[in-house]
Amino acid sequence: MSSVRVLIVIGLLCVLAGVGGIAFYVGDRYALSTLTVRRATPDELAAAMANDEFYSDYSEATLVVRGVVASLTGDGGGAVVQFQTKGAFTTRCQFDQYPSTVHPGDTISILTEGASAERLTSAVLLRGCILAGGCSRSPDRLRRGVVTRRGQPTRKVPGWIRPGTLGS
Image 1 (spheres, rainbow, N blue to C red):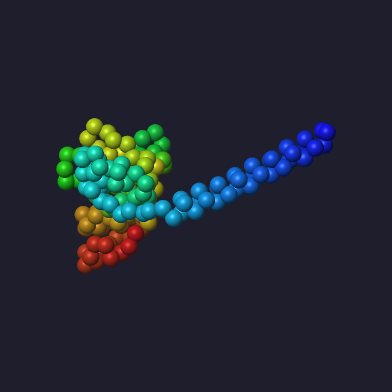
Image 2 (cartoon, rainbow, N blue to C red):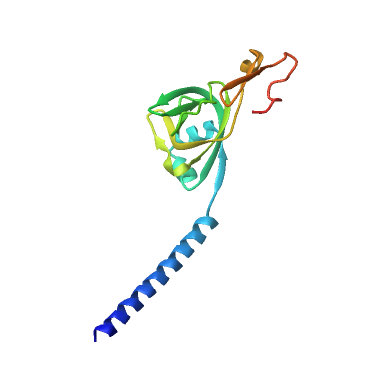
């Protein structure tokens, strides 16, 4: 009798493993079929949060945000970037590691999940930001004559070179 119970238990475990595998496959297919990536500006995100539309518009999307850095403050090993926005409500982005190549005035692109955003009193805070593709220097920094790559000065820039033509 005990060998019959062992076979029944083994059979039930096999059925549970099969159901779990099928559920994982179906869930994976659903996640990939509903994956959305949305481009947004810091002004659009700030306006959406100020108007209580952020979570309905962006919560299920991976966000690609491009904007000009207004300020950069250290945050215990990480950093918080505040983007330039037109209104009083601002957009901030929290990095887990300090991005040494980013400076105020630079234009950066970041990736983040909309669901991880947090509403602050006068800002939307995007958590877990990842710097996408580096940053481009502001024309003022190019006019001063030093272009930095990966945080290190690389060369003097002649005055005849137009801003944005050197790459990043």
